[in-house]
Length: 65
Image 1 (tube, rainbow, N blue to C red):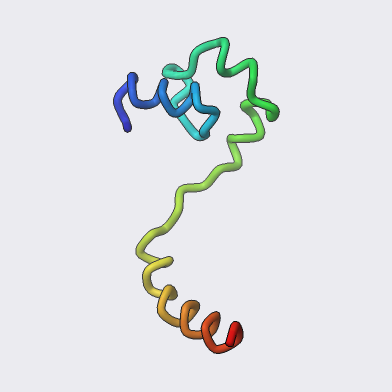
Image 2 (image 1 turned 90 degrees about the vertical axis):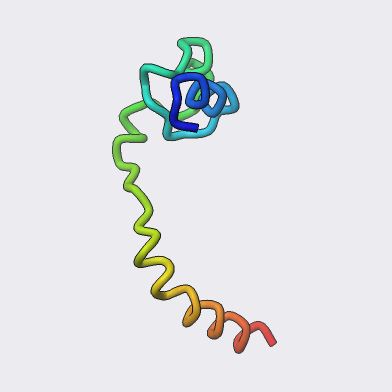
């Protein structure tokens, strides 16, 4: 997934973010948003997400029933 080839596969499937150097010009031209809009993307903090996952699931199940 992180190799140039893997990143090109993601980019050609219109999945962002990918490394800019791995994205073909043809694929880049088909994205609806300009590259500058993707600069706001922040990495997911999976440790933080995991810490609150059980509480979220419990609340969801309690309210969905």
